[in-house]
Amino acid sequence: MFISAIESVSEFTRPIHTISRTYGGKQVTPGSATLFFVNENGCAVTCKHVAELLMSSDNINNQFFQFKKERQLLPADGKFKAQSKGLELKYRYNADSLVQVKNNFIDCIDTMSGFTSILHPTLDLAIIKFNDYNNTYYKGFARFIKDSSAIKPGKFLCRLGFPFPEFNNFRYNAATDDIEWSNEGIMHSPRFPIEGMVTRFLAENNQLYGIEMSTPGLRGQSGGPLFDDKGIVYGMQYSTKHLHLGFDIVDKEIQVNNAVKKISDYSFLHLGQCIHVDAIKAFLTEHSVKFYEE
Image (cartoon, rainbow, N blue to C red):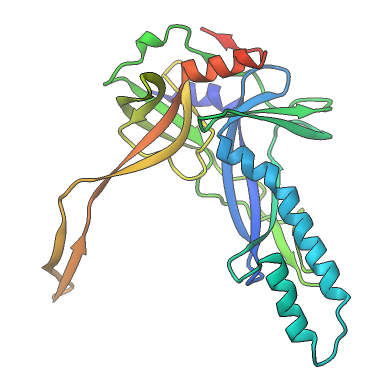
């Protein structure tokens, strides 16, 4: 049903790869998110929580750089451990503190001086504008549905994004105490579509802003498009909510491999939430960003 639509939408939907590290270890953790382009001018939309992480990365990295710089100036004597602890308190670092985040926009543009983010004041929505690029690596752009009255409960739609990151072209550099991208390993993660039925709409203060889906949006699909079987965009995936079903099982005895075991299970329904197409178009219009309708 969505075969040709997925191929079409894939032309302008791109992953954002992220690697991060906490203060307490040298383990590099990969993550991913999604954005999709709305015109030929290097403008895309994604979730505000994704854009905020991108924007905060430099501050996180610069702070850790300053911490390491100060730590290197400490004399290597009997007071080093205590002084290091004082430095950790100064920077409010503990084992779980995020100290490094690095991002990579995959197959978006050739080079750039940076990007500009415009954050929606209330919705989990943001515009990303790439600056000073020469060529784009995406093809085409989103075509938003012109008449949103076609969006009704019972309509089947699809979302596309990049959950389950498989890229591993990164490493921890012990010599520099740094995480870094490398030219070795897997550099891409496969796209992943998930279909669902429109169940309800989301509104606040009598203002419609979202679409609820019968299936979850997956981690890494945040910022990915919601579209129909023709590839027309109806919204953008931003979160998943979890409804307790009440079908709880507590200490139920079952037989597993010829042995009786007690199990407990608390069932939830996981529903994807998408920013409504009208909210996206209104935000783009407000900031004079060109987009297309069909």
